[in-house]
Image (cartoon, rainbow, N blue to C red):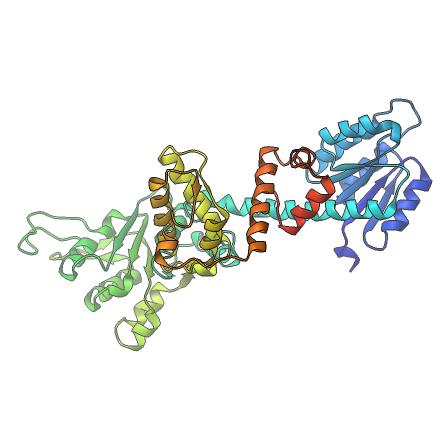
Length: 452
């Protein structure tokens, strides 16, 4: 459909050239034309093109730099706009100057339309990749808003969306997922994004405290309530007043405590152990479990009414093996964090280590990944983190890669390193690699290399 086509603006004071380019591109793109500075700038602001073919001299005056001036204005309208400067042979020096001012590329007259089409196609593909990366970067900025939760996979974006939605309410939330998937981090993110952010966040693991002590830990006790109760003690509910109480491993709660919790969720009142006074509290409850609570309900091991009270909204934290390239993103974040903590700058993963990180199932999820990388940073004496540093080769025999795959991974990493060192300037990188820009663009497209 026409609305799905990329938009191109052709700016040239020669009608013949505008028409030539228009008819060459009109079948594949939505093409607009402008003959002068003011019209071009107006169309750029109104239509927001993806790419501009811009004549470097928009008048017949000698040393005309109108095109350079317009280039700067166009990039103020859209910093991701791709501008191809069209020049005469005598204007090559000015064309090179335009590259330093932000132009994507330049092309000399007379125009070879097939070659120009190829340059345009690459430029628009690069713009798409950059805009996709911008969206990814904006999503990843939520790692600050959502504390330590990092990810860009579809499943994690759904989690982020749910966290944002439930943060605006005071309903109970049930967070499910395997151990190590970040359930407490999600609970903290909900609290930090809510109106209760300046009030206490109190966490307690219901499975880590003996049943005979858990009631007192949760609800507090009065002096003399039992042998060791030498004074009155507040429980976690009272400490969480006006804030959030996070009950981890809620499936381990005994039936008597399930009843007391249900009563609180119904009327927001508690009674200390050994007490007779009902205490009004304002506490939001977030619970988490790695157990199947529905099955526990069916097996009469968990109260059905409490289950429905807790699970007004459910957030399921996906296991790491279902999060795609999030595992590589997380690995890089952990590597940078632990390298800084241990004052070991310049640490990187080898292509083999990245491959094993991607292939491994991570039964311990994010926690296992974090621990493996922390250990590798502490123990390595090298700048390169290898599969053996992560403990993979000792645990299982490493699969031998096909030679072609190894070559491609090595070449891809080498190109990426060169681009980073040259601040993603393609011309400088191509020169450093002793290759042409055309070849470099082909390799970047082949290996899906884009600026992060």
